[in-house]
Image 1 (cartoon, rainbow, N blue to C red):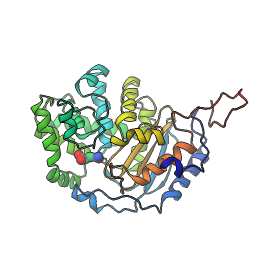
Image 2 (image 1 turned 60 degrees about the horizontal axis):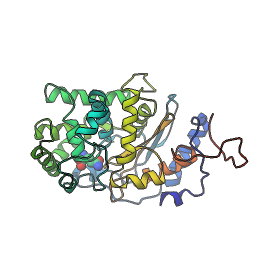
Image 3 (image 1 turned 120 degrees about the vertical axis):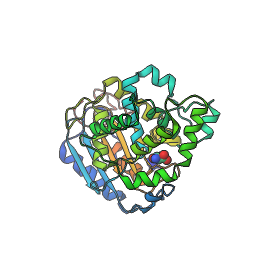
Image 4 (image 1 turned 180 degrees about the vertical axis):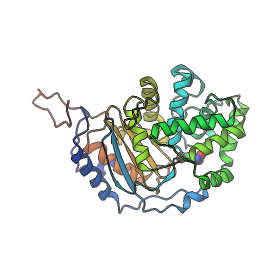
Length: 343
Ligand code: GLN
């Protein structure tokens, strides 16, 4: 679907660095113009406040590991981070507990089922399977080391703020709307508790998870947060080392297999980058060693991934040579194809 959509864009191989500033700005502008009028998809409404989003909102931002950036459209519109928070809370917990523990306690395999699936937990003997679906994310939030709920929430908010390079604030309206309608997440937490798979009280775990999903961000914030993962865990704008190189690597591996829910395989096949989406319409796609794209557009596909965001990422992945799997014969070969940036 997305491959045929960008068949007119030359496929550059994934070597070297991002191109120069003018070229990045031009391609981000072209990606925005190409899909600005594309209204496909439906705005999420199972959390009542999300239904109020304007379907025409569309923001795109790209931040390089060297701190260069380019953006287009509605990059100042704030929205709740939703499931994209799962990627960064996973990173914080993985940093504390380590590679082995996260593998054993939560898991790192895709469920092949929807992000809020109860059946997935049942089918897997009570395992939440991975930190990118709701059950696994609630279990992961419960693992943030803290003496009490306040400390746990502060650690999450501070940690995500360090990824963004600025203090992130809770959107109280989203938090209240989701708190009144999150019965399914409460059921998932109780189910995990019944399997002895939740480290803290289920009511507290869901409340903190709902708070983390309600943090307000912009497309520009998502690009900075993603660029921190692209840069081995150091925020390229503040220079702050938020997580280790190893945790950054582990987070990107998990995003590649599970970040786009049951459509992660298709996303990797089409776009070729670790990424995470959220139901309010955000996507962050990360090109390791190069930078990250943050997109925001509320209309979603049936799996809960922003339609315009996916299309814009497909375009930029191809035009900027970001796809991790796009190689080319070496320059010395008669079959050499164009590469981008400095090898
Ligand atoms: N807070 C949302 C939920 O729990 C997040 C889901 C999402 O973004 N896919 O349903």
